[in-house]
Image (tube, rainbow, N blue to C red; front, side):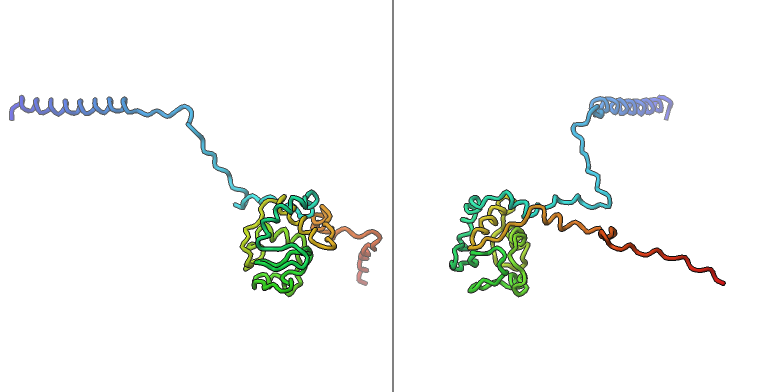
Length: 215
């Protein structure tokens, strides 16, 4: 192979390299994607609380506080939804559910002539449990969550105002309506007593005398 042939081959190789290199530079310039000065949107991740625990849910309002501003007339309108399954008259008939006359503070699952579910009987504890204002509030919120195994198919009233109005109306279904609970009483009762503080007039513990030195 003479020198001319070698020069031709080297020239072709160098020319090919130049073309490939040029194409790379041109494509980089055409398809370049510079980073934007400002991102389109920012994703902020919420930092977990200490220990990984979720934030506590809002504390439910005591039924005593809710009843303080409740309306029995508004509750009577809501109770119309319940009349398909319950009567509210004195001596009224049992329907799908028992008659609700004088329901406030009545023993649970003890109304005469009604066949209660096994779940309600268990909750009743043989009549020891009563339909207090607190129990009525929890039960009307979500019957199946409060009394496991109850046959009541009602989903419940999630709104505090609706429950308080219905319970205020149920209270009127009685010859002797039960007294309303005092607002704030439940909160005061839940405060722990200061066991470390001695009662007024209580004798202080005698101070220990130092031991006599050994003879």
